[in-house]
Image 1 (cartoon, helix red, strand yellow):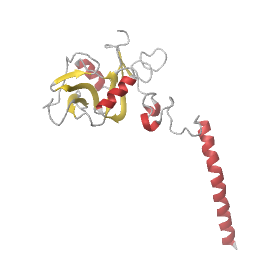
Image 2 (image 1 turned 120 degrees about the vertical axis):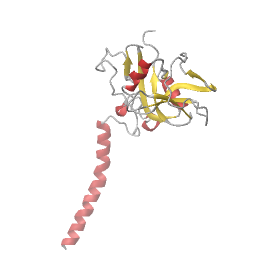
Image 3 (image 1 turned 30 degrees about the horizontal axis):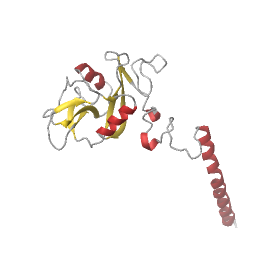
Image 4 (image 1 turned 90 degrees about the vertical axis):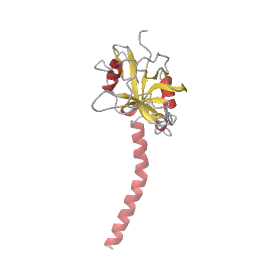
Length: 207
């Protein structure tokens, strides 16, 4: 008799749980501001699996300092841009979703910029202070082998190459910044179809 009563209690608990859990989920979604049928959306309405909320800084992607000590109205760089270089008067953003080189450039264009074009040791050092991984930059010799250009049209006037680079083999037509722990990052030619994080750079804020 005691065993039968216990089984009956367990069944009642399971039925109660099945009834209450959907209500709790709906309540949590309502509290979180998530509309029914719109799970997995970023603040701008894009799907998380499509953009990882890159454009809006969702999920921690826009939380880095922009060089002003805060993110108030006086910040030079508006979201999602993360870092401001006061010398070049440009804004930067690291996209952490790994993309091919062409996809990374397209993403930067969507944000109003291009993959970063590095024109000095100063700018390279500025990036080295905060990049978190190897990243695509805007250099390529895909049009003419051995002739490198920047996607934003800047003259190619500076490069700090990895030893043995640039090496013209295996369709290595796109330039990646190879992060080092004990020195400045170096330029490295890689196949453009590889997927890496990337750095976007805005035009000058006050041209």
